Length: 168
Image 1 (cartoon, one colour):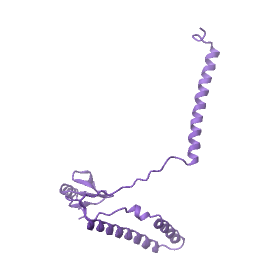
Image 2 (tube, one colour; image 1 turned 90 degrees about the vertical axis):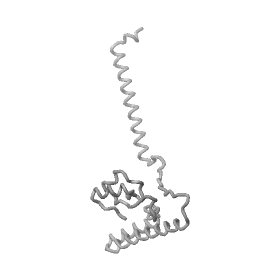
Image 3 (cartoon, one colour; image 1 turned 60 degrees about the vertical axis):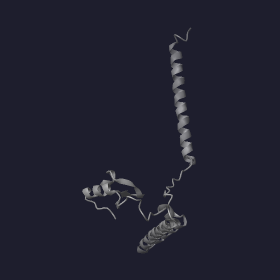
Image 4 (tube, one colour; image 1 turned 135 degrees about the horizontal axis):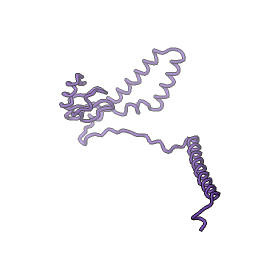
């Protein structure tokens, strides 16, 4: 029954073995994480795609109006980019034009502006500007576009109290 009363050398040996094993295991785990990060594998990248939900009684005219508004917004965004590029000169202009061409080829504008709503939901009377304090108050129905909230009458009243007029 010497295991109940080990000698000092056995105690030292066990402590060294346990300490060494813990350092070795920690080193193996850290090395595995370091090698994994070098290889570039970090799992599958998930693309989040936001989709617009429409009511069942949506007409073809509504669909065409939304498509026309979306195309107009995309064309306007590209025109703004081309106008900005025209103000540049030298290597900055060439670099900006190259970035613009890659953006257009990659379908960037379709990703940035996936859809435009032409008619707000029933009951919505105004749209709030992005970042206004009244968005946290009651009356916000839903996000009409990213950064723009659709407001009911109560939301418009809250904006008026805050001193910020809604966009109509």
